[in-house]
Image (cartoon, rainbow, N blue to C red):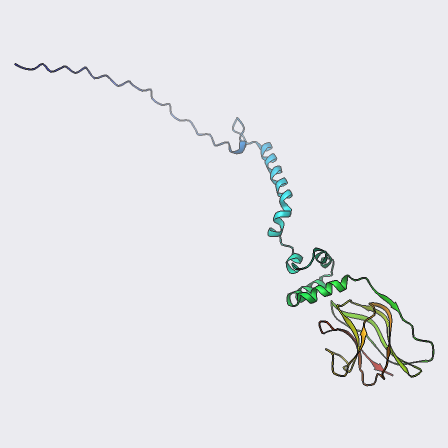
Length: 241
């Protein structure tokens, strides 16, 4: 006797899927809306974007300018005040170049030079006392560099047994602490043992008179000297009559 095995239902046919249509050409991505509906390029929108970018660059320029375009004055004179930096920008090229060298070696001296240059011109017109004067010697001042120099004449006078030094028609480049010296050197490079300090330079223009309480024997020049930084500022070799 055989068992009756259940009959299996007939297998269903798999439903036929419709075949996918072939893909057409792929359209490029419409980045930032720069493509029109017809596939062309939207130049008007690109122009708007460019204007916006340029406006952002212009507005933010003060913030990124020091990084992209460092100011040479701000770099060289970073420790100085904004007012001093503004003044430095007005200096002639030769004076500015020399000041850059000085600030690298001695920032304090550079700052004092700038302060001196910013002072207003001080003009004097000292006259000799009345009487019979004798002109003993004279010499013209020289310019040493773009920051040290003077124009004018140093004249030694004798008046009734009293000696005077008169700086005449002067025009002096200002310096930090200028004094007037009688020097035993014809072309002084510094203060020597026998030099005589006549005191601070009175001004930077005009005529300045100094009375001497000694006979100017053995002196070969008049020197303008920076007593703070020990620098010769200018000198005038004396030619005796």
